Image 1 (tube, rainbow, N blue to C red):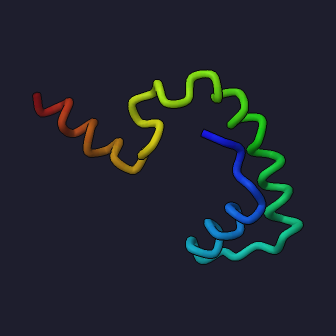
Image 2: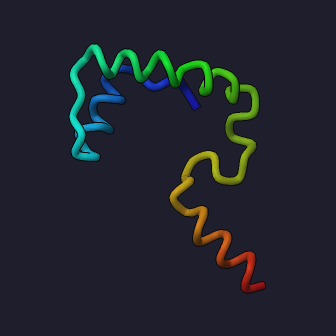
Amino acid sequence: MTRPTTKEIQATAQIAGVPVNEEIATRISNSLGPAFEGFAAIAGTLPFDLEPALYPLAQAAKVSK
């Protein structure tokens, strides 16, 4: 888990259909950065660290057991 770069923010926003300019992407990156840095110590240890989109599937599987 690393701090998102301005280019990564712009690419993600473009895919989401909400393109942002470089200044806004930099502001987003700077505001999210501390959260990513705070979780760096436990990165890779959380079960949904890499693919949070699968969380509903995992929850459904856990409930049905």
